[in-house]
Amino acid sequence: MSSLSQPLSLLSRAKLTTLMLCSLLLAGCGVNNIPQYDEQVKSAWAQVENQYQRRADLIPNLVETVKGYAKQEQETLTKVIEARAKATSIQVDASTLDDPQKLQQFDQAQQQLSSALSRLMVVSERYPDLKSNQNFLALQSQLEGTENRIAVARRDFIAAVERYNTEIRTFPGRLWQMTLYRDMKVRENFKATAPDADQAPKVSFQ
Image 1 (cartoon, one colour):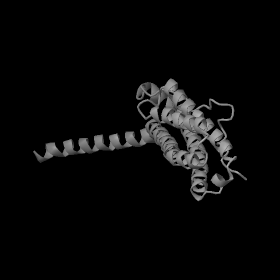
Image 2 (tube, one colour):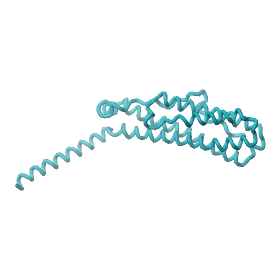
Image 3 (spheres, helix red, strand yellow):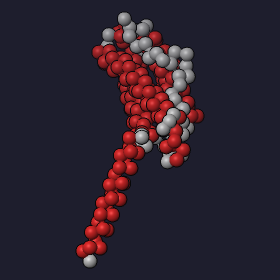
Image 4 (cartoon, helix red, strand yellow):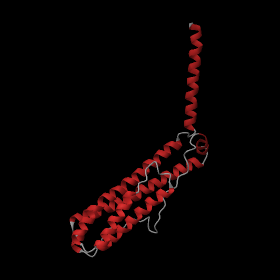
């Protein structure tokens, strides 16, 4: 009995050793790169959404502050509110991230909100009391910082998508994509839809 169990034990150890060696070889060949890069894309997109949400959260207070000093600018204020409502109604999460049309709709809505905010800031220039209001100055600073964060988040997302796309279109990633990750396709990257989309709205009065 013991003489029989010893070869079986050796055989099991040999299989385990072979399995471990195969795992190491596969890991070294980049078999895990595609899912890792896919998760990085999703994480980067979550940051984009997070920063856009931060901007959306600032807007109600900004509108109320401007309204207190410039009630006659109702049309401009209304356009900002409407643009915010449209922008926040379009959500592109990880499950819809591979839909180029949805991504484009999201981007266009955010660009419309950026344009509405730019117009609001130009209008605010006409009201010296508003420009010196501490609440307005704080909101202006936060909005400016958020626009910078949005730019960084978008840049990181673009880089993550580029890395992911490159991996599944080049060897050996292409091989793993065809054999193990067939459902993971090349992704559409974030494209600017406005002529000045790469520039944050100017919110400084200096």
